[in-house]
Image (cartoon, rainbow, N blue to C red; front, side):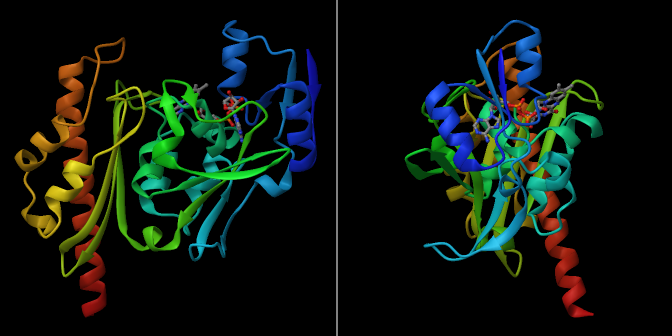
Length: 290
Ligand SMILES: Cc1cc2nc3c(=O)[nH]c(=O)nc-3n(C[C@H](O)[C@H](O)[C@H](O)COP(=O)(O)OP(=O)(O)OC[C@H]3O[C@@H](n4cnc5c(N)ncnc54)[C@H](O)[C@@H]3O)c2cc1C
C-alpha cells in the first residue's frame, strides 16, 4: 500500500485526482474497515496534517457571513467550541469515547455517511452547506442533498470535503440534540434527533428538525417543521408530533433496534429536544429580565 501525507489541500487534491486513493483523516472509521477487510485501498492519502483544513471561524461568503469549520477539525474541538450551536456540540459529545473524539474528525463523520452519524442530524437542522474540492475546482452542496444512501454520498472521484459552512443566522437559533443507544458508553445511536428553533416571546417563528437512523440517510422533517410554526414551545405535546414524524420516517429492524421502537424513539427524542429548547429560551428570557 502507498501511504501519502500531503501538507496542502492543493497537493491532496492533485494526489487524489491522479491516484484515486482513499482519504484518511482521523482513521477511526477507515482503519476499522481496513482491519476488517471491507476495503483494501492501493493508496492512502492522509489529510490529517493539512493545517488549512482545521479550525472554526467566522468568514464572509456570497450569502452573508458563515461559521466556517474545516473538515479535519476534530470531534473534541467541535464539542468544546462555544462559537458552535448547542445541537452540534451535543452531537459531537455523543460520539464514542474521548480517545475517538480526539482522533475522529467532523469531515470523517460526514463522509463516512452512516445514517446514525451523530453530527449529521445537527448539521441538517442547522442547514449546513458542504464545500467539496477537487483539482479542478470547488462546489457547494446543501447538507440535506449530500447523503444518497448508507455510506453513500454525492462525492465524486477526485473530490474531498474541504469545509462545512454554517449560516450565521442558524447559529443564533436555539437548538438541541438527543440520541439513544443501547448503553451509555460508546453506544452507536439507535435513533438521534436535532431541532433548531427561531423563537419570539416563546412562539415558534421557524423551525428545523432532523433525525438519524430512521431511513437510509439522515432526514429533515418538513411536515413537522410546518406544523409547529405559530405555536408556543410550552404548548407542544408529544401527540402533536407523532403524525407528521411518522409520515416522513422509514425505519427498519436491524441488530440495534426494531422499526417500531425507532418510530417511538424518533417522536420522543424530537419532543425532548424541543423541551431542551424551551428551557434554554426560558432561562435566556429570565436572564434578560434581571
Ligand atoms: C469505538 C468507536 C466508537 C464510535 N462511536 C461513534 C458514535 O458514537 N457516533 C458516531 O457518529 N460515530 C462513531 N464512531 C465513528 C467515527 O469515530 C466517526 O465517524 C468519526 O467522526 C470519523 O472521523 P475520522 O476522521 O476518523 O474518519 P476516517 O476514518 O479517517 O474516514 C472515514 C471515511 O470518510 C472519508 N473521509 C474522511 N475525511 C474526508 C474528507 N475530508 N473528504 C472526503 N472523504 C473523507 C474516508 O475516506 C473514509 O471513507 C465510532 C468509531 C469507533 C471506532
